[in-house]
Length: 306
Length: 287
Image (cartoon, rainbow over all chains, first blue to last red; front, side, top):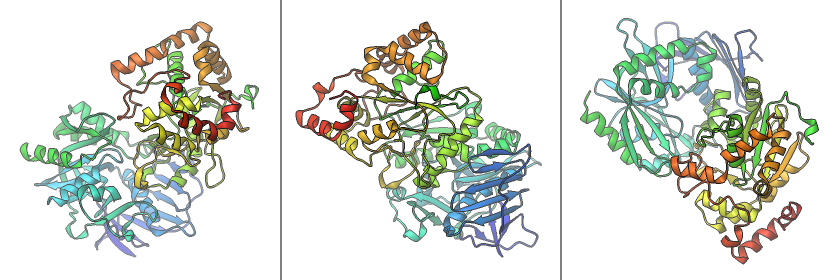
């Protein structure tokens, strides 16, 4: 059995996850990952069926083509049923991107589609859909000396004692498309680092400088690429606009709705937008403007302070 | 199959075409028809495009940027079968530029189970070239090459990246595209020539409305045609822009004419197109 820290949880797994942080914990794990037989279907009036995925408030079943079936229950158990011949990287990837968010939702935690860097005593979040430059931005800031907090997903949890929302990182790895390495001027890794064998996206691990402590969210940037002839534009959003934009960055709306977690999303996002400055950064989609974006971001959070 | 076979219990009506063949004009017309003559070109009332990544992600709970294209093509039919069951609307109008092809499981990427019918818009390839070149901000010769490529794609990304808002779409060549959508498909298909849409809009659009099984009076159709006239579309794009336009392209609604190729193509280019696409150009009265 392998023991890890990931997504703010203690994880015990039958299969090895180089992506997660090896971690010994004295008590029982929060989540168990095992190889086994998964159900063919979920049955019940509260089950929502989509294309090869079925979800109820406490159960999640994803049947991912020739890779694996994943069955997640009660926020503490994942069973993987790998298909014959499936590659291990793909099996691990869809557990991290789908089964783990299901675990989080089942535990009343919010998986937010965001990358983040540490800044002073908190974190700065970069939200946005796939391809908007979240990972490239934090990778470039990392090159400038900032510490990576999380890539692609941050786990949000409200502290019941003080009502503040804290972010937990996911795991110590950053995923970058091949062209991102060129954009930020760092060497493209070996093919061994590809996150799937045929995908030009690579993992950069940062286990040695990884922070597992929850952090307060100090500032949020919503990244957008537009089909407009602009370079990079920044504007602060009103609380209502900020709420709408953060809600739109829910990576798993089907999970949220099927598991009946809209109320928790609403509560946590409301708390964030009440106390945290949120900025929209829009830029043209057809040109490389990452340097201007990072300069603008850095100027914003250093000039405004915390 | 003809429209005697239409099953109105099935909701999806595919608005299929090679790019720049009248699809957007027809969607503007439908928007006006479904919206009592009102038309905002940036808020079309039709139901998106087959290659939409957000729709796919929402019906699979996957981040499709992690998927291989062949996996996407296997899941797409299931996405639209599920979408059709989920949506409460009676009719779903979905634009598609993909050719009618088969995935690695040898299943059609366009699912039959949820398909009521398709309207296939065809336009003289000599006119498509100039319009498509303008749309892509590419040259006439590059566009002729793309239209002749039996493995031609729309929205293909360089270096095999996978982040665009639309999946790459296998169009085949222009002839391949026409052949794929007109070859005895398992659902009714109405072919409409762009040139006939221009020559007698009321007849062409009335035929389409009837074929799709939609109830509308002649007056409603006429009002929608006026609201979506080419001059109106151009005016609206000039006033407020059009979000479907590529950034490098000067305008989406360009000329809206048939036969403008005579002013745009040289004899060598005309010869290239007519020789490569002779069979289907002859079949649909373009030669």
